[in-house]
Length: 637
Image (cartoon, rainbow, N blue to C red; front, side, top):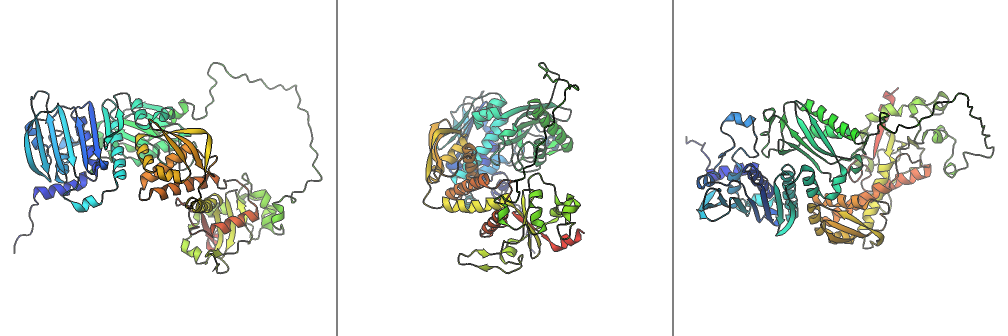
């Protein structure tokens, strides 16, 4: 029998390895920029064409390479960064595995021009699909000039999976920003299709952050710095008032390398607990300096996931440092009387009496004469408790006084203890009508005809509680209204009638370079929604008009969130912009938590909710209602 195991040719092995290192054009830029930093470059210039799919070029003024080194650099596992296995655990450079250039050359057409300072002539090498096609002396400046064309030209299946030029450019910008932020002592520039996007001169960390993300962020950041035996931590965190739902700049760096670290992210967010709205995020730029032997950067091919020896201890140090910064800069309320200008607090005078002024009750006052009282009969125990226990400050039913609890049949109902056990109800179960005493029938408009006139009450000013066939349904009133308003807004924004109202005092909004690229591409769709923007230059835009119906909304935040939504999903720019605007309008206009609703208002809200196509969840996937079934109620007694 013939042997079946054989060695792969180098060209095939390199293509396989390229799948780990080179995923898209931004991967090439990352590897070559890091090599430039390792080479001691002080000026790095990056040029891309068509988001990097056609051409990527990185020019640096580093120390360059000799003729032999230039040739050897494209062989697999050829590196100047490590000599033995133990060096892997004491790394001080960015690239070290010797796979980057070999992987790039395996799936693209590469030209390298490089020269050392002591050499009169440099070296030019041309490689296509791992094959060296040309090598000759050339006149060139000191440093290296890498030009990579037609990525995945010899792997059509991989090239088809590349995204649009805009999406690939966004990825290029992301990797460019990460390297620029951690190397403020190096000057960087980025060009796309011949147009300069970034010019970042050498400077401090704070200045580099401002140059990358715009002047507005300068006033939003607070410095953080702590020195311990485990790690030195420095950088900046955002003020609580600048929190956002999405599109927030969040960066961790360790020993000059960008990293993702969800565990450390939780440490930062823990410090902001009760200071920012739930679900919001704040910007941060945090730099760790640790002993290289205490981390492992080789746990992931892209080297963005890093393992620490003392993660739990560093978590505690980081969270404490952020808390201290927030307190030190008066973003957490503090009372300190050990300062000059102490407040003048008079002592209590026991000789002065406070006159008693009794108030006589009004005999004409009738609590049942309000418009809300006319909407339903107060014949049952539920309605009699309505006013007393559905205000925002009302206590849970588990603490009802005995005389009030007796008004409810089965007076020991404890919603507070049972609610956390409720399970999500499948949407199809609702549409089938199995939750209701009577099966729903479809009316002429296709909506489900359900009877919402059953007895119901409001719980803690947040939930609407009503009986159903399986038990009790608990509806989040704010989310329900968001769902209803979102569908209405989408219908309006999808129509041809989208009037714009002019701003008496135009608002000026600042965008960074990557946001400007997206904004220009979606400008036509922005205008179609009713916005009127003028480019003032330097990333500043004047908002001269806004869509009708968005009064009171923070236009700055709205536009940034719309751009972020488009950056995350650019399959249909117009639809993404419409959905982002519709959701923002709905969330800002919906019923707030604590707002007391009448029985009729609750009934109308429920009817509108279950007339939508997806009543079970909000547009961003949050659960709108849950069911407390009969068994859960019975088990609670």
